[in-house]
Length: 497
Image (cartoon, rainbow, N blue to C red; front, side, top):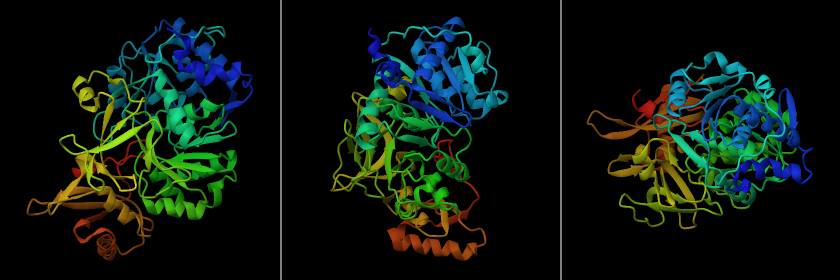
């Protein structure tokens, strides 16, 4: 095996060898770290793991906030040949315990602020004092040899459709996503400052905050706390990033914030991206009008590591996910696995070298999802005559109304286009005759509204916009919607409410 296969060499050590070690790699609210310092600290972390008896290929769970400690632990584990497993820091204690047991973790590295909420599992060492742990290591730790095809890290699926699944990724996938989406779509440059409101434990945030900037020696700003609109705008004003990564829910919240304006607080902002859920066209147009920068919407997945279909800076069509990223292929298939004509809905299936090695201990699910070089996404899409892909919803969330398939996302997009609506989620609900019809859950911008009158107005608005059979028969006004920590709406929870 060659050391060239270990992703740490290309993302980190290469910059130090090339004389770029003094460049700022990461900034959090309390400190900054250069590429040289990060290399030294990851060597110490790797040595400390070995001193603690944690062996190559064992797993360590990272329950960590977005601070400089995160890249130290992630890249330090890879340097040692240990497999880091970043997890959602907002998971319930029961779900965290499930992951600790399911992954058979040898240790869990936890931010001090999260320590009290961490479940205790027998045989799993807890590392919370990172500084003390690093003190047990040394600066001269050799890089673990690794194959590019060797499993480097795991991510657990977000759980938007059920229990999280351990998704195994290899070293080469990190570089592949950086050289495809990161360089050829995002256009990341060495002088960029990246700020990702999507957290680094998530596949989308991992690329945004870590691998894309590190692929070119750029810099990242971390926000450890919750990415509320106020916190995001303050970070934008203070650090003036050039690229911002968010999710549709956050973009909607930022647009509703009275402090929103040109650059969203950053006079250097040149690019914004979105993933996690499809971006409603109305949000994209309003963001461009108010902030002055387009949002590049795309679709990715934990299984594919990052975005594989996307809009581009010179090719934006709001309301679509864009076209396949260079290096990826996509097709839309019917229930028999045959390509459908343009304009017809089917399951999106994608091909690309960043596909996961499979799920941990879920053989049947692995075989159903990863079929040869193609990955089944479980998302329903339409490819139009111009080659743009338009999201319709999860395959198991599509509604058949009066014998015609209806996309919940299309109904949600129509609702959000009304100025009174901040967010919306649509699910199927049976009427008194046992027939499925759309049911909408809506968050309003202003609570001081005649809700009965507004409900009827919104129904008419949807009818006029997308068709009389697609309108929601029931509209419930709510204060919040159930979501994963990455911003995905958990519609399966609404179906039983």
